[in-house]
Figure (cartoon, rainbow, N blue to C red):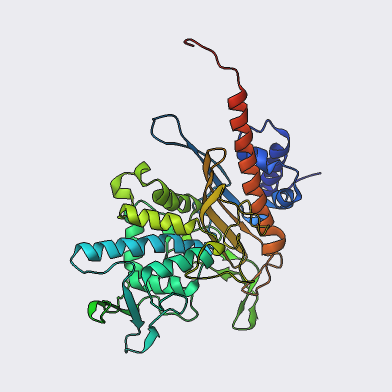
Length: 412
């Protein structure tokens, strides 16, 4: 066989190396596994735009935590659509802004009821029927984001923060490959926000936030891969040209893991690179990002449309009814425009194994975007679920090998 394309030759060589060489890293071993869910993707890497980052959490007696990372095709300059994973930093920033307002003397918190109106005073959202008391609160919106990735909840928090605050805060923390520009709402005004009024239990106005105007502009045009596919659907019409993502949200895989690590292990970052949160805020975020839809009564999603792994792609994404408390997954998934992404901190309690796993994959066989024809269930989720299982199995085997290894007394 004569390979004329340098890119194709590189991909083929990479695949051969994965198959044949001494696989020294976990990801090399996992991606050389013969499971069809893995090999179907590995054999067409260029098409699927796979990126993976694995970070093991190393615990040694009383020593500070250490982190060991390995990656596959990681590229900060290669664009992928992050979809609902952008809701993770938005949830954290909403609690941060509340802390800042509170410290300036404004007596509101995550449980304070509020309402949203447009700039002319027309109601956008005044209550929340999914709340046990019908209240619209920041805390309840965050729960909905983690349980079912509720788009309205994200939109309400997005405008509470404003685009300038969001991006300035993330850049201040050193997240240079993250830009969040838009709501998940057709024809939305992303530059001017709605207005917010917070009330006491007696109905007294505690805080009113007028509409905020944004100066922050999207600048993804210099990235690779911002134009994707061979066509897209626009209001029912097929446009036969690549879809332009240059003004869409962006989070590189490295930043995505970094956001989650800042929430799970904030002490592993210098104070200037952390979210400005209190212990109770971290505890709240960790609790709800690790819940399944079956573990909440308010909001209540115990119905046929939701199942335990509804928002968990790694390990359990292709299964239902098999999750247990032995493995806790602290995560946020995203899926849209044929792209599935999951960022997760996974803790195997029984084996005392902890690791971060972040991955993205594109599954759009017809190369047409916005037509709701994607291979999420047949290709994407099976790949991510199998990836998670194989990584966990490998880490378990490593731990068994260490425990079984003979110990020598004395000084080496």
